[in-house]
Image (cartoon, rainbow over all chains, first blue to last red; front, side, top):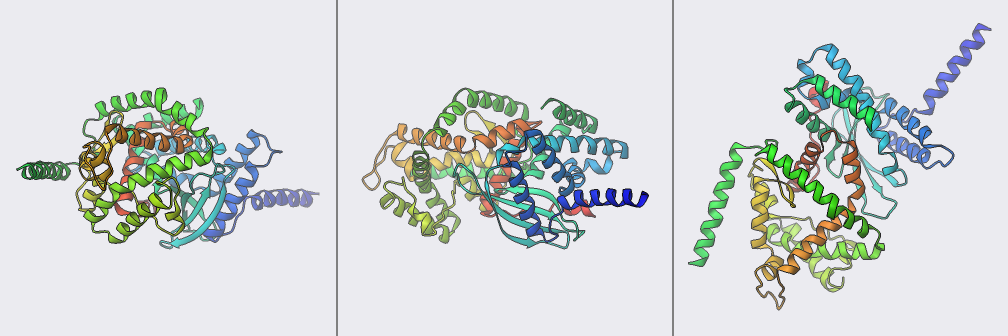
Length: 199
Length: 247
């Protein structure tokens, strides 16, 4: 009986994991992930809450949220206490997921195509893609910075939309908040928490 | 004498740019609190005037929007042509001249864009970008009323643009060029239409940015500076600042 329970529990976790497991090749990884997200977002049988939950799961699994958080914190990550970094990471994760799900409707019915990829180093590959908006507007070029240190588990670290890095924009926004608040990480954490609660 | 006076003014401006640029980087603010106040004013202006017009514009049939966008872009190429020359970028000069000639004739005054179909892809160039290609730093960052984000180099570029842009020559200065003439109203109408077209095209992006920014002023500043960097390089080189994180 115990074996059967263990088997079913294992099977459940395997199915959950494989549900969101994409190719390890960066180009295929991006293509499969985006195709999957677009398919789910245009699925009329899912309500908004279910769609948001799905995107959150996908992001937690496939975006390097911890590294993104540290990157956007800039040099302060070196001088902050472990406790502050830990609190910041928690607040950043909530902020990131909140802002991600609020953008869901923006590009959900667009045509997506992976163009090519460029391996910059053993750690990074840039995958180039383009999105054709549903309203027939000009095609949008999106580059994906994929972290490939673990080749078995590629992770998204940045999106560069028409040459504009989302991570860099975020980093410079946070730097401005910090510089006008005496580089106090606690104020940044408070602002991130406020955003997650209010928006 | 007139030419000498103009040259003197240009040289003074140029030396001023060089001086200011050597002391300031674009990430530095010229006068942040004033810029933030101007930014707030511009946002209010956008909300009251530009945004409603852009939303209305977005309701127009696609061919009208596309035609308007093509028309303003085609006239915009006139500013790129002297800048292509000043940058010594003859490949882009070919794209600009070819595109303008073809779109203004076969493309019915620029309403259609047949040049794109044969692979002509002119980049928009201005004096700020040309100075950037000469290695002149951007200088500090500030926000202009109505015109929006800029830097010392780019703001001087905006003024210089009106001196080398053939369209400005025949409109603002009311000079005749190849039997074409116009007036200031033509110039400012075109600039206003270009702004509305840009605002309408990016309506959803503006909304998303506004909704997801904790400090909108800084986000807009970052986007402006990244965009100018890319335009000066004519490429999208992703900065590899991530290396530090992995060490």
